[in-house]
Image 1 (cartoon, rainbow, N blue to C red):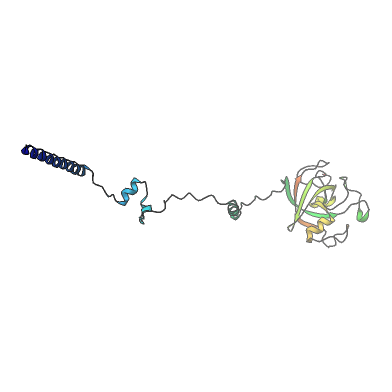
Image 2 (image 1 turned 180 degrees about the vertical axis):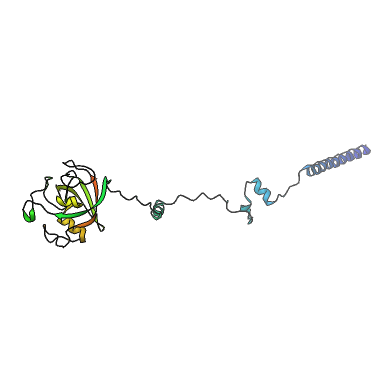
Length: 229
């Protein structure tokens, strides 16, 4: 009876010990199989959190992205205008005068016929226009022919408004100029009166004439011919 009681006690103690050992073993096994805690570097943590090294205090990281520079903008309008003004301007072609139909040289005399009868005045000009500066007399050209006369660099453009000179034209005097034109070509001055040039010169040799347009009045085109020929 006593021995059975001892066996029961031993059996209980042994069971308790075995249960404790099993619990300890399970705990140990649990500790061994658990993964050890890993300590990652700051860069890995930053990568996991999608953070840049800069935010972690890495001073070596670039703080600004380098972008290619855009091309220079076009010059302002005012600057372009200044450049255009500074550019050399092309020279304008010289204006051409009227086309010369015929030209030559002759000896010229002077006259003023206004119908007053002064100094052998024979009456009003044959062309129908009143006596005036720029009215010339030709022995043969058509009346109202436009003519330019030049002497010593001075020029006057006029028209044929009368006939003459008469007999002198047979001696090479092919133009009669009004008194004002005659004196102006001589020295650039004005005559003493309409009927007197105010100088001892009665003729100008080597006067250049240029026909610019033929008149529609009576007369002959071409080189001047002596009066009545």
